[in-house]
Length: 178
Ligand SMILES: Nc1nc2c(ncn2[C@@H]2O[C@H](COP(=O)(O)OP(=O)(O)OP(=O)(O)O)[C@@H](O)[C@H]2O)c(=O)[nH]1
Ligand SMILES: [Mg+2]
Image 1 (cartoon, protein in one colour):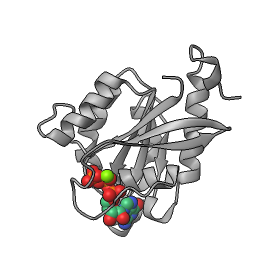
Image 2 (cartoon, helix red, strand yellow):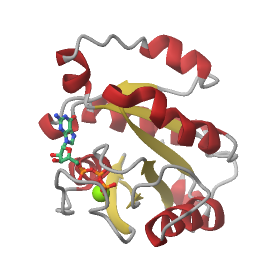
Image 3 (cartoon, protein in one colour):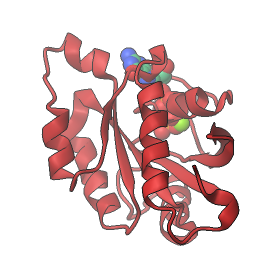
Image 4 (cartoon, protein in one colour):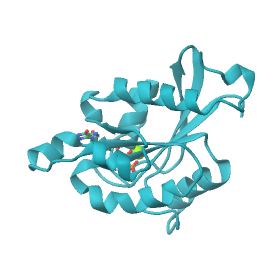
């Protein structure tokens, strides 16, 4: 790989493709039912004039892969080994989503958590302590988001840039971010 590759992973219907579209300008199909994304799809994000490949994965509840979609997501995460993972979780169903998160944390890759659907959680009166979540995730950045309104996307891009810079010690010269 001579470009950075980062993958969007998370449970079905949490807004991964919405985040992907906001990051890359792509038009991946989004819709309000689980299982819309059935194949992985790559797009490009420019950070400091470097091309970052962003991969939108089908939704998965675990890395055990019970369906073809889950297998596609698992194989990309485990076998293709992207440089970093963006774990998109649903703020309104946080606990259920954290099962996959615990599995992703065991993969030896830097991780950013996007807590999407913050609007839904707030409407239900849920409060989410993103600082505490970050501490529980060994200091991984946690970004609150309403992807459908583009809220939090700029913060995510900044977090991606910071994360890649922290992990560029052994990368190809053309991948170095200055
Ligand atoms: N209220 C709200 N809706 C959102 C938000 N982000 C995405 N959505 C909506 O949630 C639905 C699911 O979004 P997708 O981006 O298709 O979700 P996905 O995770 O890619 O789904 P799969 O590919 O099936 O796993 C769509 O109707 C989006 O418009 C958000 O922050 N708040
Ligand atoms: Mg999708």
